[in-house]
Amino acid sequence: MLDSKFIGGMLLIVGTSIGGGMLALPVSTAEVGFFHSIFFLIMCWLIMTSGALLLLEVNLRLPAGTNMVSMAKETLGMPGQIVAWITYLLLLYTLLAAYISGGGDVFHGLLQQIHINIPTWLSALLFTGIFSIVVYTGMQAVDYVNRGFMLGKLGIYLILVVIISPHADLHALSGGKATAITGCLMVLVASFGFASIVPSLREYFQEDTQTLRRVILIGSLIPLTCYIIWDGLIMSVVQREGSGGLLALRDASNATSGLTEALTQSIHSAWITGFFSFFTSICMITAFLGVSIGLFDFLADGLTLKKKGMQGKGILAITFVPPLAIVLFNPGIYLRAFSYAGICCIILLLVMPVLMTWKARRLSPAPEQQMIPGGNILLGFLFIVGIYLLTIAM
Image 1 (cartoon, rainbow, N blue to C red):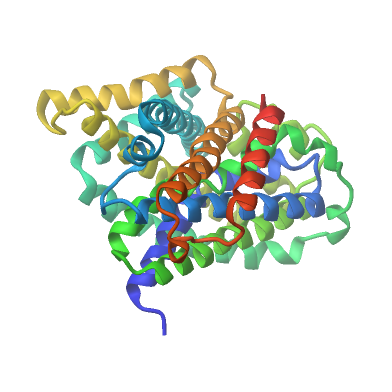
Image 2: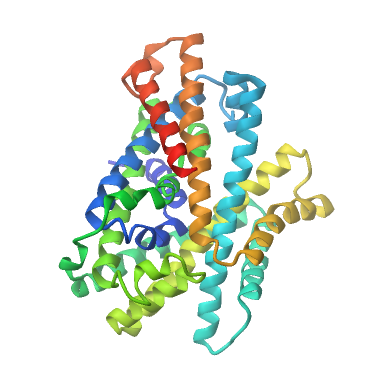
């Protein structure tokens, strides 16, 4: 029998993983094809989950409450701390830019449905302004808002799977080019970037190593399953070619609202359109809130500033002005931002965990603390994979 704490831990991983990236997957992998994308999704899941387990191993060797930057400093020294600091900031700013871009696009589409036409830049500004107030209010407000949206997100996902399935054309899933994966591999990687919450999970479950390992393994399998089903559903309903097809949306500035419109034209159902619009909105909001509160707290801690009053408003500005400016000058940055986030994920959540684990094992072998088998051979393999992925991305 699973206890509520175990389920809560898995939901934290699911909530961190399944965000705006889920909406980007069918568009970014359209050229690759469904069956090829399944293979690459599984490979990315294996690699990034290995990185998460290595992070857990390093974290368990240090006092509870140790975060990513402190872990890097303790194992790799000042150079590691600097790299972790810069990469962590870049990752969160890039993800925030993606969610502002996607959220503003969804917000713009919803307003158009009620015959309110405003510029896309204003919709991005309004989306950021409304939900930044929740972030400024504090973690409790974010927690309560996120809980409600998470329940809605999982419920609507199941409803969409049920009502879209009868319209699926399995013949549409054939085709695709495996070689096209180089253009979207970082989006797949970013979709499994849940390892940043591993230190928080360790603190939540204290020293229960076996439960922590199970939470990470089972919790990460849920997003993998959801991604494969989602990819198959969208690719079997929305055409790949054509002006409104998935390939055309890949380079469009309105990828999220464009996907809603393409689904509407393919199925001609007001119910599906409404549910899908609601689902995309919730995905953007939950992802936006999670990344925002993480960046807000990170900056407050790093700059040693208070979260309320003038200092709090200053942190709020530092949190949202840079990614908002990026979106205002590059309104179509949604998919590209996920690619950049994937590069940061490879550095922060795979390459650095391998190096930190290698150093930690040298200082204290302790085989019973190792989260994954394979020793230095596996560490070397994962390091080579990480460097290879970085060379492809760059």
